[in-house]
Image (cartoon, rainbow, N blue to C red; front, side):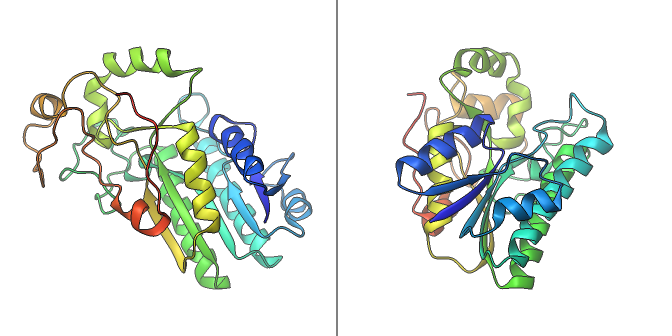
Length: 263
């Protein structure tokens, strides 16, 4: 399979590029701006699928209009342009921030635990809004062109290079983790989720939550919930450091099971 990868030099994108090459896929890498239709068309010519990861990754270092405008337009341009060229398989780097709960300045709690694809959104920042719009764009493109697509809702992404620094940050910011169930995922598992989403049978657009089975905290999950989300209903208890996140849809649709954890 020949795959166009955008954002292939980023934290997750570089892992996806390496993993796809290891599995024998031929890659085309977008070198220009993902909002540039001509650049996208040149890169997408002759590919079988698109893995779209190019984006401004947070709202903290760019103006709000730039964050939203860049991300939303890049996703639309890449998907629509490739679809017009005949591509019918798409995987995009979605985000748990599509719910809006994590970056919302009002810090609303989830409606219930575990977190999953049906968690009601409460969006109040440009990055989360862009990620919600990205999912709608994927659905529109798949509907218009009869394509198959997956939006992988990625949580905090961990690599060997950033693990220690982010572990300290997560411990200091435990309260903020309640919005996504203190979720995280190793970049190597993210790369495998992309590979599976590019190759597994599918129909239409699907949103899939992917995460490690444990939290990125040393504190037991029930203690975290009691302290930071005491009034949020739970569908079940969470033993040890089990993440209050439901990834059963990823298992069912993609056959995805994370290999890497903190334990």
